[in-house]
Length: 157
Image 1: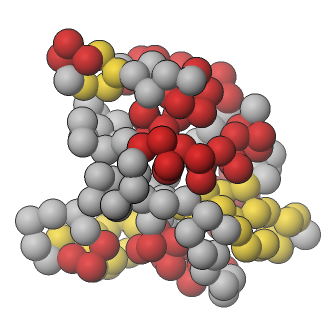
Image 2: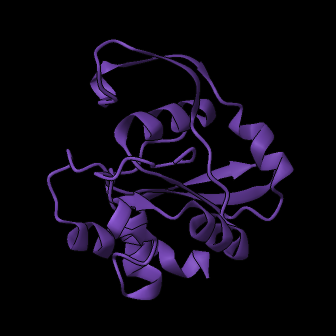
């Protein structure tokens, strides 16, 4: 899948399936072991959810995407995104590297996993939520991750 969180082993779309449809397989095409990109994009569009990386250019130091083996060469201009998305009230990060990269751009304290920080951006308060990684390398079952993600459901409705 040419989109965010394409790896069948990643739980992001299962977490969203649990949160919004009480069905971890809602966004899957199980017979093909892949995610349904159209269903995902339609859902995100309907809810007004934007996705972005926090890094524009990354060097993989080893053959995987683990945070400790990623070197960020150039960050995304999140301030510009926020200017283009004036209705944005929250940013959700899904891992330590993404959280650090975002928070360094705004000199904001990194929230703990499951927590949040406040960002004053051009006279607007934006909440930064830090969720656990949706990777299976993060040692929590998908249902437990979904319980942590549940705190952001209300901002997505």
